[in-house]
Length: 334
Image 1 (tube, rainbow, N blue to C red):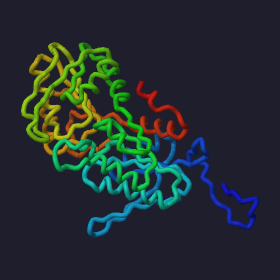
Image 2: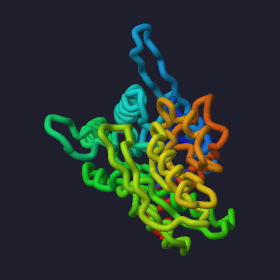
Image 3: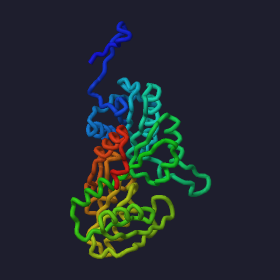
């Protein structure tokens, strides 16, 4: 549609794309995705009802790269979908896309980070170490982001590292629906460590079942020395819930402990399938009947056959709608 200014009729007409979703404030919405989560970004845009924005990345011979937007975003609300798992290129690409959007005169820039990397470095737990998640928060704000939307932060206090709004979503809204549809008898929830007991307790309360906790002891990162079970799982169909599967050492060992103590079956539910090192081999050889994860991180080609993926696209699309229409987000998780 061509619109000509009545005040300045001699000025060239401009094009207005009426197919682009518009916010309550009259601003147009554009959704883009980084290379790390292009597939998820496409699904989110489709669920939202808009095409994924056009962007490209020029890669130089030394590995340096430069993202760019291939369409005008002046005055728009720009949502950038990108998880920040290793390598650090994923975080750097998000920062560059935020900076490019700011320099292209976007009205608001919202980073949709399905997996917020570096979140395990949320405190100074030993001398002379960094607080990586605080550093990442500073970098995102310095780049020019106006809001963060993320899923199952490893530590809730990371929200306090930002002086901008942070919408921390929960995969429980997806997993609980999945579990209820399975109609499992003798259901019991469990946590693979004490740190995740709050999460597992919330699931148990919502599903009306009992809770068990595995207490682990580590000598160093990614190595579990011993594990003790708290609770009676005899004859129960147990679901282990966690936020991250990294090397899968903890959750696989917890599953084995549950089976050794009389559990009828064990399933694993985890939001972020980081799955580094021997994770896939461990999951293949584990006692789990299935491992349910989200698509916050793309699975590698050698993914375990036990893994089933629950999409987060509809959840993020709904939250984007709510952000733009100033509706409650917390009501999604009550």
